[in-house]
Length: 338
Image (cartoon, rainbow, N blue to C red; front, side):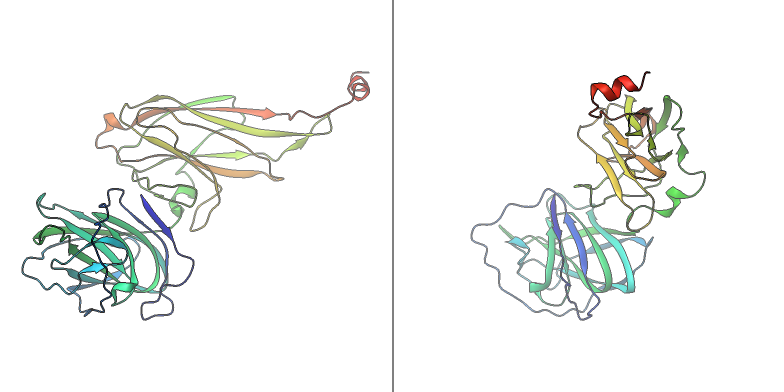
């Protein structure tokens, strides 16, 4: 996966416009050795204006055949794009921040269309190029999404479907609403629960602690972990839980999130995605803060299951009170038992 984080503002006619994070699909084309990029300002007149808001999704069916070709290449993609292109204008209201995702689908296998996201009407403003899919976290401003045709070895033009959606950032507030996450009793030494990720709400796809997007819905659990308490050894006892999968659908590629709450910027306490489909993950967390905390554990998956039989799992919570090893003199230890 191509991943770029931008710390500076990327201007697009509005001082508020900025891209916080962008990512593209992992099957980008190899560089074309003789490709030479030439900067080109272009006419921004779009086929359509999309006013982006959280929750807005749509599908656009179009055809580039016989259309204009004003752009021959982009600095964010080392290959030529001299085929006809279509331009869509994206507008995010001032003060808003959202995650925008665009995907090309239903493409003729003989036609090679690509996606480009720009912050202005000049190819130098290209933010990312991708073969079929890109995602960007956008703040208020104007951007341009371009469907263009690869042109190394010939012109590519023809029909395509552009699907887009706009998501909330962070973890959806619904996860922390009463009764949504399954409550796990931290006082019980062992809790075994069955679950299924088929057709569940997708409350989080990516976060700073995750290097990839997880496109499935999640099953959520919540635990209230008591504050550490002083023990007779002069140290503290900490509450801890360990999560393991005891059963999992063979094709289900699971991952685990652990957050301290919901919203745009909760703290990601842990993230685990070490294994592939059908293999169990495990996570252990100890409350070493000074306070009682409530945590939210999400069982997620790389790709959403298409039927219940491919989405099942069984998860086990083991909880304990941990007494860290303390250096104690023999005299002090003996005094405890007088």
